[in-house]
Length: 337
Image (tube, rainbow, N blue to C red; front, side):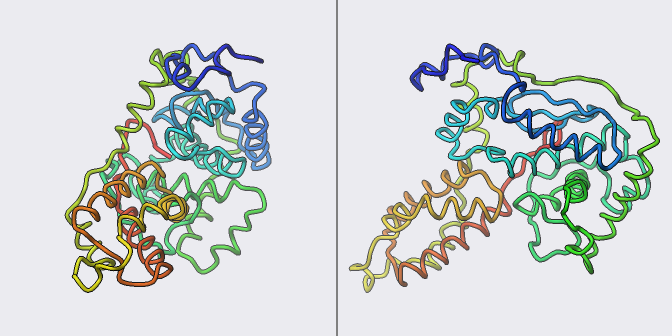
């Protein structure tokens, strides 16, 4: 199917309203992937009838046994626009999309059967209705949580812990018993395995087909969408950055003939941004905002290199990663990815 906006220049495309894009899931690459996860559910004996729709981002709303998928994944031109505006496309590869779908299906099955009300669930994962934190500082070495999405996301909230555990359990051939042998997280996986077996003969308690924020209701332009999205992930500069920068660079006179720190960060900006995004799961856009501020601050402080470029690159990536893992993960009325 051809759309009137496919060949528009970027500036003209940005003026098109999302509701006017005419997007559907059918006959796109998403169709195949949804069939894949539905087969995985069927193989596990789960038939709670999750539904899928295109919306403004990935989420599974509270009280809805379904999954919203970002509209830009329904067309390659919109995926290219997303990458241009945000430096990446969340779920833009087959593997990445399947990982998020399995995670969100964890929320959907949680909603369908109101699993969060069960005492054993709460004992293992915690209260799912707990308020989402403004920030969390994960422990990468912890074995109390499965590792599925980047950024050790299972540690952010009890509902995310359950969804991540479900995702690991659902994936065909994940060999989770061997992978998590000896980990406290194995107890959670075994609980999910037993619980899902019990649900094969149980009717879902929630069966509505609500589609909050579906594309047809998004009556604002792509330009407005990206203005809001970029503003949402803007970050402020912290004085703690200065202390960290002085650990790596210096403005002492003896280093005045060395390369400037601003030049170093600017030249390696993309490589460092992509590397840290892979480690932490943070948006590249967020990292780029931090890097912009760091470049400016390095200029203001007159900082210069004190070590070799390879050493500085490694140390700087670690610095940025440490700052990022405690960055804001905002809670909303729905479960965020």
